[in-house]
Image 1: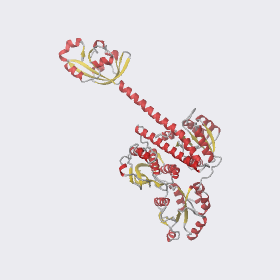
Image 2: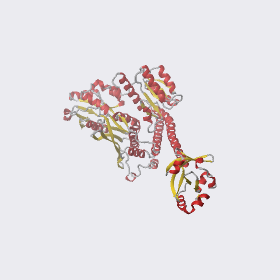
Image 3: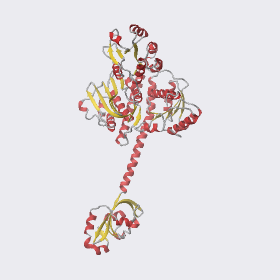
Image 4: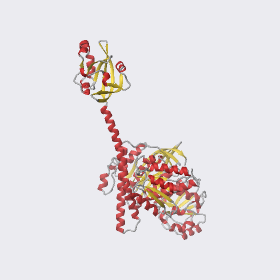
Length: 638
């Protein structure tokens, strides 16, 4: 510690306490009288101010600037303050702590300065890095998804083109590779988001039946390409609306379903169950589970299964794709929602992953349930098919008493109200024979969506048809006809059973600045007989909307001149001003990180579709929103 000559002469016998206190600090420090005269300092202070001796340390007021704290207050009170030190044109952020000591009955103030400039610079660097990281994730997601949308989209279009067998094989391999690459990119980007701490639980209100039924259609092509039966058992007792983190639940299910399909061989099956396990007061506990008949998981691998990249080497060794991060990501999401990812598996026989989430109920369920109906499910096999077994479970959930039969000449049919036919081929003659044998029995065939002409041939002979894949909404329509609570004419058989050409007067506005993706969308929509007006920025979209009336708008978000969010706001204003009614605007964007959907929908768009676009899901979404718009125009919806 360095003291002034005058101070030493007056107080040298009493400065031991001051020196001892000073030795406790490595930060710059001074001792000063209440008048402001500096009587001592340490070497650290001289180094900070680039001075060589105490004589060069001038009056405190010239270089110390406590923010909002005047010097007399600082020197008369003990405490901690923030301030700045100025020296040689430099300014330092400091934390100031002062203590009052008595030296030979004279009050001396010890002031310690801790340089916080380094800390502030570190915080600024951290903020910059966080901003850079978020920008990087957003940009790389966008730059991957935009070209992958074109690659996957045009490859899918090629599948339905007249190609030779080897060309079809090449296209299939290209499609599988592109889908695999996209899944790996999505999982990797999501894992980076989670590890950075930028992902949090985001609770919101949603309709579980609508969300999960629409979600189920995204995996049909993937399962079909491997020859796997993909089935969904969605509880019809689910509330109409609940509160939960919809995006994370769907992300978990997506990873589990994709894994189930990947590790299941041809002719196997994957079952997704979304069932109520407990309802108490205003809360409902739902179990989400994905079961497969695949290769299963060896016991010794279970402990490392949830580690990121743990199964990457195993996948490479066995010729499978995947970075091994889907389960790790799912585990982290489940943990965020205060739940646990549970596993039951047996090597060679399959696996079942499940988790449970407690949701707050906002509105009660929408389905009516009439007990007492007796149903029979017929299959020519000696056991129910997988879809027959699924129908059996659904009927139980709808409070219908069901039994399986394998013979059409049986007393069980005399005791039944309805017969579900799970057969590969069926003709009107067979139906007429059954109706003459069992006049009071209602006959309901189970058919795939692509049965087409075969379905049309029998449509008038039956009250309804169960269309695969079986989902609670469509099955409820069939049961409503059986229960006589809904007229047969209410069900649009041809729409449910096969895809029909859309009316030529439905006009869709497409705004997309990437010309390749714009061409892809035009091609898909024109093949479905929609009329299409295409533009390459938001301003042109608004201009086109002012000139013409449209039934629906597909809107990219990142576009030059005017982005999709601003264009949507202006379009909605035009609707209000001109009284056009409800025209759906659907975001079709490469912004697909966690939180992007909420941000875009909150900005006023009606729906969010992430690139790369699944053709069938895109068309289903368009049909659904056209139907909603029609119902609103008719006054059936508010």
